[in-house]
Amino acid sequence: MNLSCIIIDDEPNAVNLLEILIHQTTQWQLLAKCYDALEAMTFLKKHTVDFIFLDINMPQLTGMELAVLLPKETKIVFTTAYSEYAAESYTFQTIDYLLKPITLKRFLTSTQKIESHFGNREAVDNPASIPEKEYFFVKSGKTLSRVRLDDILYFEGEKEYVRLVTNTGQMLIYRRLKDIEEQLPLPFIRVHNSFIVNTKQLEKIQDNHIYIAGKQIPVSEKFKAEFMAVIQQRMF
Image (tube, rainbow, N blue to C red; front, top):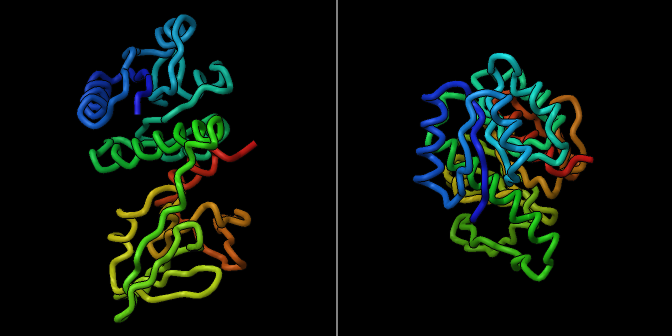
């Protein structure tokens, strides 16, 4: 996907790493590298970008302070070594919250999330571009069953197997939850060591728990930032 972005970070090594990851794994246009907030504000007054990579801990003006000054529609991917700002980041148009040091695997997950965000926006503007519902063939025992992704409520890891739950029933899959996670696109997301959920099926979020078809599912701190970044895209 051809997207445009800029990097705002006062650490040259962090900027260089992000630049390498962008060039090696995406078709995005990196329009600028800004090493402080004032430089970024000057650039953004004259140029339009799809989203920004924004560091939080910067001198003079922090990333959070800069985010307040930006237009409300500005899409942000926060990059920081501090997890405690995750909750505050949800008050902006946050697509993702990347914790440093950023690994290749985590960056690839982020690129999928970013492109899915803009792909969903394109689908809203052009309903004809929405693809047909996807499905998997799931092996449970000696049976191969065709399951539509939209029908899945959640996956629950249980020792040697995974329980796949839909509105009409459930089946046991003899695979690791991690292996299943790697095959699943958004709107599926890991929220706990034992749970992957379909965010399309969410009923409510309350006190670090989510509810799907009456089932209470915990959201652990380990996965909370990524989960809430996805939810933020659907918040008024």
